[in-house]
Image (cartoon, rainbow over all chains, first blue to last red; front, side, top):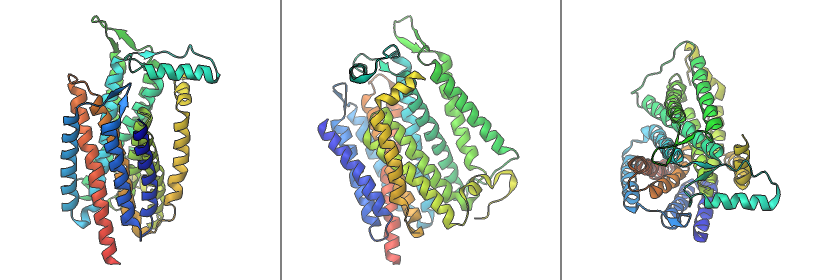
Length: 325
Length: 102
């Protein structure tokens, strides 16, 4: 575990240095390699050193074949793509990252639906002794096949799901627009529909968060199971997030796509950071948040370079007013 | 709600990391010339591929009879790897072109 922490530390530091070098013309290419090397170390470290509750990871066959397939396809796709089609390729890869965050949330939710929470709300004490007790219980929970803080964990899972899915769906639409497969599409009152979709997502999420701890019932077999209503809510939120991602990007003009891709890029960063919270994983957290904040600033800088405001790009096209770029 | 507050309390170091990283990200990027916007976006895209680590953990923890977790985890590993590997290679190609032009 100590060695893994060092690997994660190296990963986090290389991401920072890599981003810094990427923002200077002379060092940009090296910066990319530095970040890639840090990523490699973090991935290898995770595969061989990660353990939870004393057990190491299994399924090495699956992990390595997944890595191999992804790496081969990724290298071929990235090498073959024409220079002019680079932005759409970036958008596609960004969508893959968003989909990855989405899948992680789905699996973790399913895991959660079968493991009842330990309720710590009775443990009201302040100070180091109470904190120690809380962290001891939290540390023991996986071994007991239980979990602590249903609400907090669910919040992180939901954030990862919503942000990752919006980024995935939006990136695929942006990719389709850049290669001409998808045309601009807007209807009157679209921003109201968008807000409605978002409001339903928030309401359903809040419902789940407030009911998660009371939402378990015992099955005849003796195992615990989350109520159907909450599980259904989860998948409705998933579907609405796809819809929101599509509706969000659809009306935006083709010339503004790079700005949108940059924005979705920072979304995926935040989704990755949710994974960092979920697994107490510092490299996912720093990497994700760095991209989230740097990506947001980059989005604003890109708008400025095009002499447009972000608000203009995102809202300007609603109601039929076309964006020129 | 108390559960969420407790979650925050237990993860307070991470909350600090988040806040510091936000400012660090802004600071690191703020003086990038506009020619580097697209490569930087692409490089950042590759970096958020760290989400692959979550996919590896999901995959590695999946019980061998839990087909949903196995299949979704496997897909997640593939997609995450695409993001990481493709992202870094595309960025490298962009910057290679940039160097030739200079």
